[in-house]
Image (cartoon, rainbow, N blue to C red):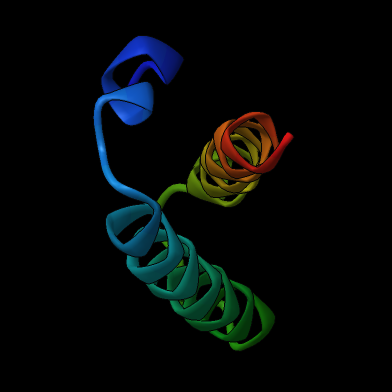
Length: 62
């Protein structure tokens, strides 16, 4: 999801999305550790998505 799309969401939606992404990252790391992850690139994609959401949350709070 692009930052412009994230800016249209409410703060509550962004917080929920951030929580979901962090859970997904935890699960991806766990799968990677036990060699069940098909695409390890998903970990970096999820990290970048978390950074986007956190940036938009910071912008809204400023």
